[in-house]
Length: 244
Image (cartoon, rainbow, N blue to C red):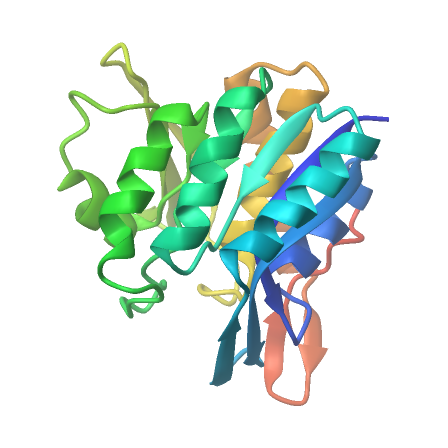
């Protein structure tokens, strides 16, 4: 069984963040260990409160995990502030494993999620990534939609083209490739981006190529949306237990 180090925030409703990462790792037959970076009090419709975790505590979590486990891949999600990003920046060069960074800074509805001063620190982290998985707003903020001199491979999530959801992989060598699935209902699903990036990390840890990992992750997310769970607020949560 492959061990995935998850460095991400907590989502109280359980559909995104580290909770989604843990469920995805289980679906892919991997073991997950989590270093929490921030606690988000929310459901799929409203964010009520956010409580940051000290950079020293994040550092201690990673230290404890790595003393116990051999890490086969890393997924980095929401880091919240530049101090936590500095801790992660200190750790990442110590690993020789696939690193997937989901640069959580702007929501799918184009709302900033981290402090402004943390954006530049987040950009610096990308040089350690195997691949980054921004949404279109994050891609604009981080790269100005210019993928000619990128620090890592980048896949921009979910452009709608001819009733399909198209993700475009931009490689450091200048080439690109599209990955498409039919549009799923609903069009925006809580935790889809977190799940996608973790699924890629799991497949990379298991020895699949980047292209195979992306295709498998995209299909997994599509099926999880199609078989999504209905709450009191609607069909808003991924079904992470669907067969891969």
